[in-house]
Length: 330
View 1: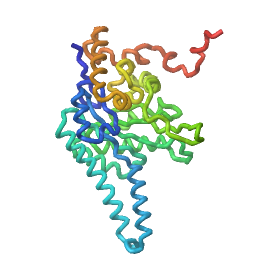
View 2: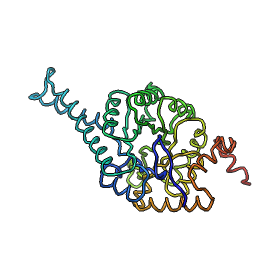
View 3: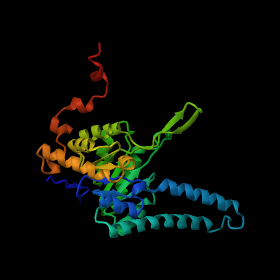
View 4: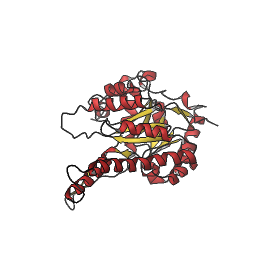
């Protein structure tokens, strides 16, 4: 029987399948079901900095409109700021504690952050609550045309958090960089232990019947894995960080491909919404069968076997144009 054990962020996982941060990881009941169905680790649903800021702003606006409770010397602002944040964070800390108490799989907390301010203190609380690791899901809007130095914000958040906690830290990044290889190298030197490629953002669509802007599908599609496959294949040998692939992981074939290019783990989300938690065992069984067919006893025997360093095939990974596809068309 093939051994599916892997290491990710210094943690030992019984297999490389991680439940990605989503609604599937926001309650202890579902987390226990994920474990029962064979998941290797769980990334808890993110605590959102932006969501707290927006809620805080709404409460502050309401308070300012009520002359009976607000004045320029009032402590209302401080109360709202402190109470709202503590309520949200304490609820999250309780989820971590319960998950650690009632399961045996690694529990990775997640902060969806847009600044490098007070979230450092929350990272400390997350560590104290017992999380095995922390994933920083950094969201910086790619259509923001301000003069913000996005690269510097990423680096500051990663570096400050890595210094603040002793548990391993990973960073989930966007693919919207001019030179992904450079930012990956720079982030990997900030003291973090892992990189997750890539974030998947909301996308708009058009309803041509009603002439309205609508939401595109909230689920990934199978071809979405290609971006992470390319960049993990290029960068996995150039960094001391562990790589996890995210988005478009819909089958055991994709899991195998991502491991072949150097991923230590893969994050599942849309496939579990579409096929149910039971599909975890299907992926694991097919992965094991493939390993046995190719005479691999352990995952590490083929991890990175087809990355850029192992194959030396720069053209396969670095070609950007479509000439290769269409060169034989007459």
